[in-house]
Length: 250
Image (tube, rainbow, N blue to C red; front, side):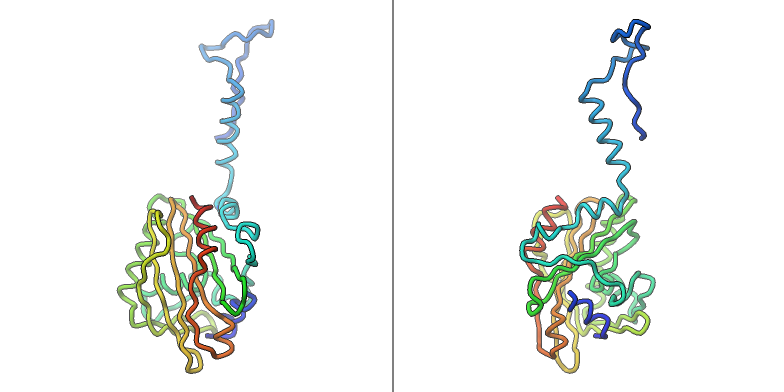
């Protein structure tokens, strides 16, 4: 694992028409063209519909992402682009094309044709590793489901590992193994463990992707401190993080 990847883990997305009748010159509540004057409730519903439509995909994701107050004891931080493996999917090249979704999932990059995405790194204790959350939303119906399906298919093709590169960064994964998802009740979920060897020491990381409607959440757990200190690690996804984030997704 290159320095950039280590540093990341260590630092741990209708206009509203007033529904009032024109009335007569005497200001009465008479109806116009057979349409009654809107009630307060109707006006409120129309206003809420307008506000909902005006929220951008990026703003919607920002509201869906967990906050520090919702995961007690965890730091919730924005990843620093300077230390990212890559800042966009098109920067990543894979020696096995079928494995692209796996590489994206493990490097905080959105899967498939996402309209907007957002990542946060959550750490409680560096010695226990960290869990990152990448949320992505899709404008076209079925795209989120397709992205999840693509990840699942990649598991079948990449069990013996692959190498991902982005600029001067390079990560070689020795193996990828499907696991039982920890998220219950979601429309769809995929989970897997991956291994890598750094300076002769093996490290196991865990990833889980969960779909809810047109939103996809990808969780990735790794122990950057153990990798840096050349200590074997097997970093599990932190239950409190999954529980809090999945609750916000519905």
